[in-house]
Image (cartoon, rainbow, N blue to C red; front, side, top):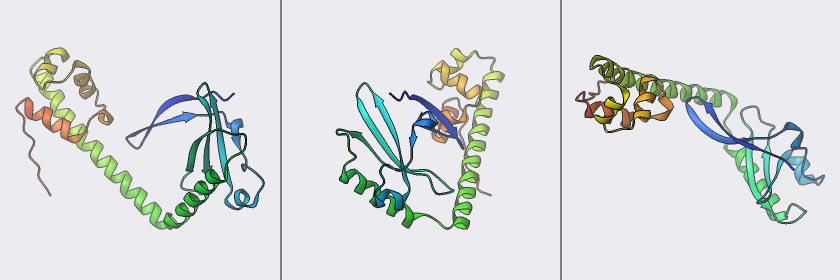
Amino acid sequence: MVRSRTYTHRFDGVSQTGFVFPFEKLRTPLSLDNLWRRYMLREIRIRDASGIYRVMYAAKFEEAIYALHCFQKKTQVTGKQDKAIAAVRYRAVLNARFAPDEAKRLQAASRKQINDTRLLKQELMQELSVWIAKHHLKQAEAAEIPMVSRPRVSDVVNKKTAKFTIDTLVEMLSRIGKPVKLAIS
C-alpha cells in the first residue's frame, strides 16, 4: 500500500497543493506495448481506503513533468480508454511546448511579474504596518478598523504576501483612511 501525505509547496509566490510519494513507487512504463515505450510514460500508483488510483505522467522533458491522466482503477488492467486519453494529451503537450529560448523568455517574464507583484504587496503591507505602529494599536484593535480578523493583521505585519491580493490590501488601506493612488511612470 502506498501512503501519501498532502503538502503545500511554495513556488514563485504561488501555493500549490500536491502529494509526496516514495520514489520507489514511481513505475517504469505501464506496459511493454509499443504505445507506452514510444511515449515513455510513467505512472504513480496510489492505494488508500477509498480505492486504487493512477496518475500517468511524462517526465522526459527538461522544463516540466506533465501529468497526463489521473483516474481511479476499477480493474487490474489499465484500460485502453485511459491509455488513449493519456496518448492524446501527450500529443497535445508535444504540440503546445515552446521552443527552449521562448520557454526561458516566458519563464523570466513570469518571474518578473511575480516579483513585481510581491514587491507591490510588500509596499502596501508596509504602509499598513506603519499606520498600526504610528497609532500604537494592538493587532486586535487594528483589525477592527479595516474590518478584518486579528490573524489577517498578523499576516500583514509579518509580510505574508501570498495570503493577500493587491485588491484586498488596497481595500484595507482605504478603510483606514489611506486611499491608494496609482501612478504610472
